[in-house]
Image (cartoon, rainbow, N blue to C red; front, side):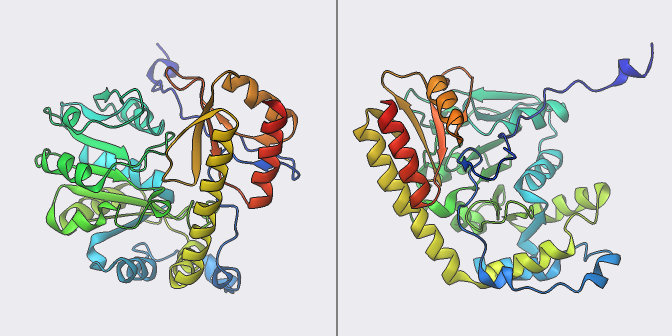
Length: 349
């Protein structure tokens, strides 16, 4: 026996490819094509402050988010991207011997965390058209998690169905991962249910709608008891998770609501135009409520399109996985970028 026998085996999460060339159209990781708010860009950081530890409670950012969402600061937890927040939630709430439930086609980090933390889990199959069936989540479990809109399918689950799942699991924590909810119709968010259900945790990110993937800011909103439990785990693991620049820039982003809404509207408009163009080129496009589309051509294999696009320095996301290996996930870029993609696909098809 040696130390290698005690290494924890894990099948790691595979992130989207990060091309090094500057002259690419990068539509594979769902980044926002527009820069952060000018308020973020104009922030001046006193670099001398970097020698000191940041506020472990990230109070300024927590307060800004609480005011923005109309909740008490005690209902807000922040972390280094929503992945950090979700990982902390797995550690905090999924500790029984019953399986955690999530869809079979979903954010691929969920099974990674479950394996890493030795959490039993069971996947529930989406329908043929990639819908979540609420009745699948009514059996005994150790917790429930799903993205809404789902990833990588972009399908939105109606708020009434989300509530049905939360209501059916009052003895478990239900986590709704809303990384893309800002691109969905108004009134779709489960945040409106938080005050009614003490078992509901809603997770958000600055990476998509706020154009700040490079700063890693995520947060969760739930009732105080849930947040207190997560804080206790955080302070037992790493109390200084949020750095000073992220707190500063995050507050500036939240303060510029006009820019936030403007860029979201631009992306939604481009998304609808692009989806229509795809359908006219014989693609099947899953209805999207996110900043990407999930599409499959009726005759040309997705892998072939993916590889030919890379030759043209256009990057899509391809998943070599059962049921979705003939689909491409295509992030919505600027109008000019999507026009280039439309021309490429038109020439190909």
